Amino acid sequence: MPAQAPSRAPDPQRRRTALRHRLAELRGADVPAQPLDARALAALAANPGCRRRALLDGAGVDKTALARSLGSPSGFGQSQFAFMRGNAFEARVKADGGAELLRLTHGRLGGGPEPVPGESALPDLSAAGPEGRAARTALALREATESGGWTLLDHPMLALDVAGTLAFLEPDAVVVHPDGGWTVVEIKSFPMIDGSADAAKVGAAARQAAVYALALERVAERLDPPPRIGHRVLLVCPKDFSNLPTASAIDVRKQLSVTRRQLARLTRVEDIAAELPEGTTFDVRRPAAELTAAVEAVPATYAPECLSACELAFHCRTRAREEGEVTSLGRAIRGDLGGLTTIGEVLAAATGETGDPTDPAVAALRRAAGL
Image: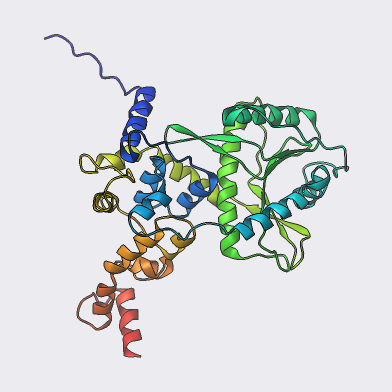
């Protein structure tokens, strides 16, 4: 009997090509992919259990247009006034060659002698296209690390492989310290009052900064020896009710870990796509009924926090309420209720119709109903 040829593992390049074709089919063969940015990747990390968002973002579907086609237009976005205010504050922070920004970086994170105004480097990162800018940024980071001084990279361009395609990310700034360390800087226009800011906004900024730090790691891996990338990022905000900048160092190790896991999950979106019915497409030019069926074929994990982070939040909220999902009340409540996943189950358990009386959640509900 002839010996069987040894089985070969799938060629990674062939797998990536097949994945790109499959994702193109899902969004529409001639529809350009919506590029992923740090906000989208951070939102994925904030809700890692949502298979719907993972697939749609991995396929590059325009969720704003999709929500409009479904009849649930998104209210997600930033006002023009907030956008202009943010730009004005960022320009103030970076004025005079970034002297104030470098002073804040040194004061919160150290990394070498105090920067001297006018002696820090501010390299030109302009180049043709995002690929050119990413290459120029990588070169500037290497030169800055070797220089042994303070360097401010204003709006550098970083590349991160996401589901087999490159996502180009643009942080507000990256600081290279004299000791060779790299720090991500996030500049936000929400106030920091008495040294603290809104926890939800700080959390969102930390998740976004973690995406940039992860992309920086990819650049650092190509250097020998690889420089140290700080697990603390610098968050710069207006101080109290003024327009003067202040800063805080935010530890993003947890956010980095979550983002790594979520990106690993994104690279397996073919597993989610394989479970879809034949011919499923999210092409926004298709009829609304067909698009609704396609979206509903992918499980979602809705929570009220989605309203500030996802364009499909209104659609998913409507469905969650129709099906009585307790996640529509918030993740904390969902966690407290254990195995009770619908509002109907919760009410039945509270009145004694169903439920194990030894279950702590059921017992608490019945005590509450008795009160």
